[in-house]
Length: 235
Image (tube, rainbow, N blue to C red; front, top):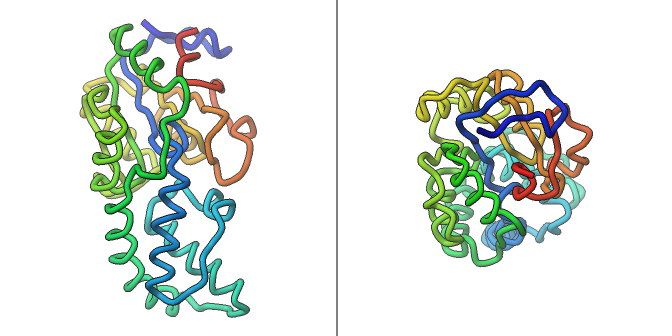
């Protein structure tokens, strides 16, 4: 069994691992930039640079779209109201969904060490689930396109439950689906959303150091450990 002694916490045997998707297993920033800029073009709005998008990723597509719309309008010299953002969002969401599904995975890459790490976790007898704030209709095709879907017993998206990370509900529901106790189920992610959800659910948590985390260093987030590659979880 995997335990957390290598991360400096009390040795706790684990039965399962829940793994985030964007910024943890797959670098999807290119997909986001392409789909969002196609959407902005449909709305006759100027494009947004990838470095701005990176800080907005992680809280679900709805939050991402609203953040992008607000950013673009502010940089046009406007001060959009919530009502104006929602009016634009009504047109933005179907456009974004269409474009994202069309290019899903085309501009994304699997991070080094991910497949080797997943293979090692499975070989160690651990049950695996993917839990992301990305809509399930986006997450499943991406995992399939990148050859990662077969590693997971369960895949849950941001629309699978009533709440998204950083709320603990998705982790608790995923543990329930895996039939594992939260204290024996490791959360692996790249951001404070993953860490906060894990802490509230009673799951241990390890963060990768190469992800998004809203543009801030992962090491600034309270977690049980930090790794530069999924391969190092069992090192």
